[in-house]
Length: 453
Length: 73
Figure (cartoon, rainbow over the protein chains, first blue to last red):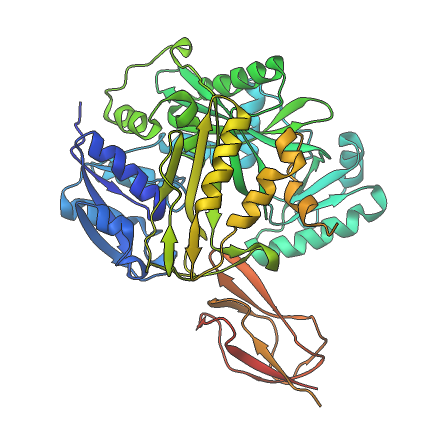
């Protein structure tokens, strides 16, 4: 079996630092790659070695697979961990890593490719007996003959979605047949302009939707386990803001069906490594439907690690090195509850506009049992406009949900970041809201909180 | 007579310019789109009038409150 002694992290920010922390505990040397904008950043400072891979824009640095692989060759790394985002779900990059004789820490490229295509992923889910949301065929620009009949078959309201879209971009709700065609045409031209592909499709609209997901881990031999579920319903601009594990307010029956469905899906593709099966949970019908599968470590994995006592990144590395023994589901035991808040450099009061800038002062919450902070920022660091606005994740765990929420609220009250705007105060407002405290919130919670009283 | 400076609402780079000099615009029209922290930020016409000048081109980095152009009323 190939041994991993030196690992290159093809990422930046908190996830690069988090992966390197696990490497250190495993006795693995770490290599960072960085763009010109990140030359003085924390992930570079923390790595044993650091290699420059290009100018600040991601497509000229962190998205240049060739430059990353050259860096790995140059320093003699034997493995590449992609983190999340950037190249983590690029089948071509996964192939190139293997062709270069390096160990790729992630599922094989064919699995990434299959799950990366929404239609294909849906088909695989269906054949694995995983419920999917009622949906239509795809409508290209000039092929709308069956539009009305398919919408009627799904039942109004329906959601019009751009096939090439993502992250909520290009989604419109339609309540009845009278506006269907005009909304579809508008979405098509928007999609054509933005993505170069005007294809759209329809999906059942879920009025009271929650985003619930299951962490899975596949052993590559056709077996997989779940590491419980998470609720990530608190979102702005379709991006997660607060996540928790386990998902609150689910019946035991729904929870176990969902976990089993996620494991079936992973096993049906002989999944290897960490993955997340995302579902939309319909709070009225109390049922769940497959949304997509993410074939990488997820931003919100700390809440799962806190309740399950597992280092998922260590598992990923051991799995890729071929030294992880498959385990039984009953060896994975959940204790208590964990909740995580993402600290974004943004202005909630100004429609969550980004707020790049220089961090002048920075005080982290005091260290307390159950508290975990994942970050890559120091006082004096410049948060540039080139990358994601997330600057830290603060996660709190406790014996139950109320204690985890209380600890998170306390931690956020102690967090001080000056020099740029952050969403810290807004996060506390969400955590203290009645809807969140009762756990009967939906993905609309932030919009609801922003409506002037 | 209140000419309007088109100001960058946030630091970032100019992703798309959706107007040309001499074009008539109404207050609130999207004139260009900035990209900052992976987000698209629309830049709106501060007043109704005519685009007198544009001082940036696509791809340019801009600081918050930088003048991107002027609309004359």
